Amino acid sequence: MSCLSLNMKFTAIIEQGENGWLVGQIAEEPAAISQGKTIEELKINLLDALRLILGNNTEMSIGTCLYR
Image: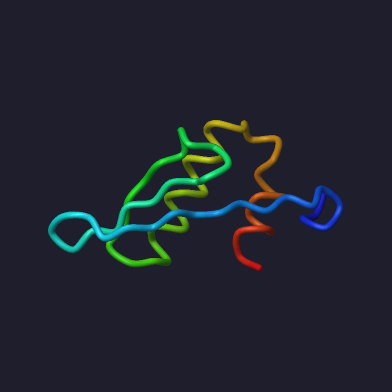
């Protein structure tokens, strides 16, 4: 499955945390929360959090959507 066939889009809310960390949350799935030292690291960590919540069946689709 691709992002186009599912039309999945997610919004990441990113804020500056303590000690240089960035913290993020997926607006459409508030339980998906993570942190990272860089935007790229935070995106990867948010993707992992989202995968855990939604299940591994959506792994390919989520990865495709996040990096478009």
